[in-house]
Image: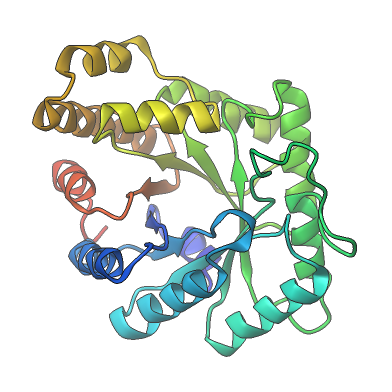
Length: 294
């Protein structure tokens, strides 16, 4: 089922994001978490795509198993910066063959050790190029719902909010169906982003991306990489609790609950949880918000 249909028919749509594990033990834990989260009745689960396409086979294999073996609709992340058009076409063919109808279309990260990296000839420079290629493909153009990324606080490579918003508008104009935001910790940033999107004619569902804080050092690293801000309240908690893992998890869960309550109350179309391949924090949030089965 195309995930765009969920946003059309449901008041709220909830989804979870996982990343391909590096070994069999990690894969076992991933599927344990997916099964634990299935009882919450998510609309879909997405699986990320490794830098430079390094997890291509794992990503496709996981979304296929999540859909066919566990029975949850799935979406495959697909980054294009390292691929040629022929390679993307082959991936689209494989997804269709496996019954996957949903793609999260991304540019992908430029390798940190290759600041002058250039996409291959006959390749893609931006996510908008990938969206256009998929939508204009004579065979696969209508096969997929396409979700794209939005950045409430700007993409880390673009400090101009107007330019960043224009990049999103281009992705939408090329045929995107849904916008899923980068993680953020100030709801003001999300609501301001939605307002700015509506002002330039972007009417798609704009789904807030939520990452429950479960580890202080880890969330500091993530925010440095993606450019999200950590409010003083969170920074103070990380400093105060230090290595007290139980306390930082409890704080992070409570913070996310408060965040999610306001987002839904003020009109967000659902929530997309960055799970880090774990289920505990997300399940606690759902229980507190009485979201299971919504």
